[in-house]
Length: 305
Image (cartoon, rainbow, N blue to C red; front, side, top):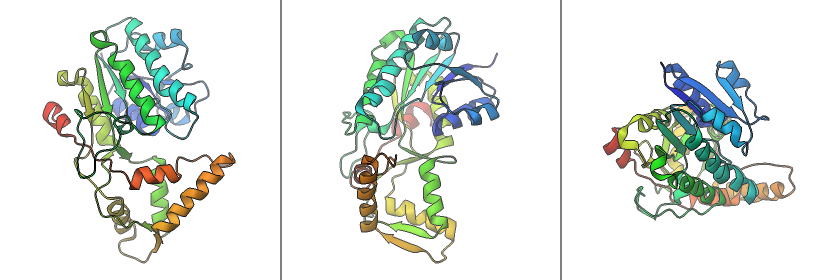
């Protein structure tokens, strides 16, 4: 009998790739979705849908019943009121943990896909490890950390693993597509800093590592950063994208000052509710002025990642 798995957040970027990957590996997949979620892509892949609301404990318990694995990826990432972050990232996680504890059947692993935002940025010049304190600096990060705490509070009753991905890129990722579209139009943001500022992981590598952690005895009740093992400056990422797409042909460099101005203008438009965007002054500063460098040495040594 193939492994059975419930995936929350399967309509999102990472979750949709995880669902497709597990299906290709022969798993029996159910995707938990809100009633209003757009599910046409999942349906086109022949994936089973289970619809319910965040606070519907009975429906969550039914969805969790008889599952071998639960991969919890559902989250509120983009700009939202504080109570929305709390309800989706913390309270829903707590509800799903309770459903998993009450469900019939033997759950092999509850995998909570958190975020480096829960850890907070690294110190200048240092790469952060799982043993260092978590100091989130955004409401998204704080509620993802509270979601982690809801998982850990279950203790020995729940066979869990927590994954903290860094910046994830790949097909169907909006930021990746936006960057590639700019590059194809020969518009290249040029940043001044050459210092390492971020860690990355390709979405398929992340999902293979996530499943590896879920199945490994060494992953039980552990937290892992899953990265590609390298560090990058944003200047390096942008110029490498230019070289790959344009192969050295002419482009139009956009100075950093123009991007900062665009971030301020976006914030103003967001206040009018005419624009909904994660981009803005705070997002720009968090990306470019704060280092987000994380080590995957633990995953390599314990999981063979």
